Image (cartoon, rainbow, N blue to C red; front, side):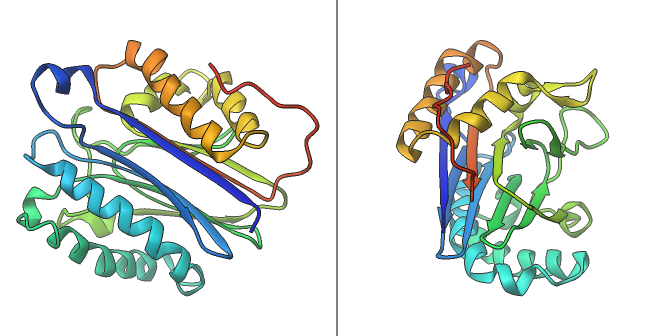
Length: 248
């Protein structure tokens, strides 16, 4: 499969100040026929929620490519039920009570035949170069969101499917980065998103991972004191003759 993927996380300034770990996790992976990127954001109100974020994120990028063909034809309710059925036991493996395993999930998987599947519960964004594919969902108050371990997760785990006719370039973000990359007035990504989406097509995965980390440290840490995460996924691109910049 012709794909590239990369991710990066950065501990937020507020967590450093209070001696707390980074509660974000970002992972990517692929099989012979499917590539996936995911971000999980642990709830700040739950001690050790970083363990839940790590467990869920690392599991989904391994599990989803192998189960893509099984999941994609299902209706939304059945697909959500299958993901929760397989994913919740991964939280139990942390050794924490399930109610202490609160974390969000933003996940995108692209099959080599063009099928795209997005799974999303809670905050964060999924961007293409010029489009918002999935928005954050907050609770009654702006600082509230929904979590994978919640009793109501089946009602809030969102599914998006479509078939891509050409290349796919996606950027996934946690809430700390997403707000800076979204223009609320136009309801569209800011120009920097298109710049990153062009860049991944023209650089190695290692170069992209280094650039994402650099952008978190130099650009996004100035905009938010929250933990920060970015993940990118690129599949089946057309040939390119120039190399776009990966610095914002």
